[in-house]
Amino acid sequence: MVRLRAAHSNNPRLQPLLDGSVTATGIEFDWQIIPPQQLFHHQLTENDFDVFEFSISSYMITKDRPNGQSRWDWMGVPIFLSRAFLALTTYVNVNSGMRSFADLKGKRFGVPDFNMTAALWMRAMVQDLYDVRPQDVSWYVGRGAGQSHGLALGIDQDPPKDVPITWVGVPGKLAQMLIDGEIDATFATEAAEVTQSSKARPLFTDGGRAFVADFVRKNGFTPVNHTLLVQRRVVAQNPWVPEALFDAFERSKKEAYRRDPATGMLFKGDDHEAQASIFGADPYPSGLKANRAMLERGMRQSQQEGLIHNPVAIDSLWCESLRST
Image (cartoon, rainbow, N blue to C red; front, side):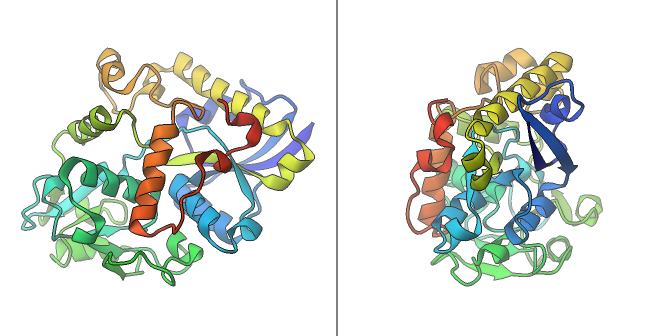
């Protein structure tokens, strides 16, 4: 039996593992439930959890950084329990002229971190559907020192070329900038004032369902935000751990579905049959076979933008024993 310090966000598909109704063979967990923003920054700077949820985009960047392998020596377990829907919370200034993401060209857009997976996928989706490139938009980054994953990764020192990025770095500032008309749109993540202001409105009247469905029909996959990582030293000492983790997290997801079918819904209140016709019977599939096209598209977007300089072999991101999943 090995005891691992584990950290994850509060995800409904993880609950059976947290409450002990699903167990991992040979593993005892010391769980900490931490919001993703805090968890990812903590792990980039402190790196003290053995098993942890992490941003797919930032994980790819760690593999590209010259000191990444020694500083963040992590291996992936292809478990994907969250979808990249943060962009669907976008609010726009009422005078921005934006009716959809098709109107994004030439606009000013605020994101918590430029490199965050949700923002990466938003840019990929807008590019694929509307031919608006990241270079066509002025980006404003809200998080500053002590919060920003991009700063922890050194992206401010080696920023994407030809992509206009302004580092605002003041908590809540993006919300005020939107209300004041200094930016045209932002994810509604930093301040409730955005959702309550008469100067701002939601971009999507349908919660973003059509936007996501159009992308899935075009590309054949639903974008994923986060995955599961394990320290390489843990695997070196216990080579069986990756398979035990994969099995336990997959069983936890399935048990969550059994308990409450709503945990398998991408959009609250939607019809299961209608969802399955677009997104598949399991909207959160595990393993590389079901997710390879998604990972390759995310990698390509990251390289095109200059977040990474060289493509990373997809298989190399994952524990060797799980590459055939």
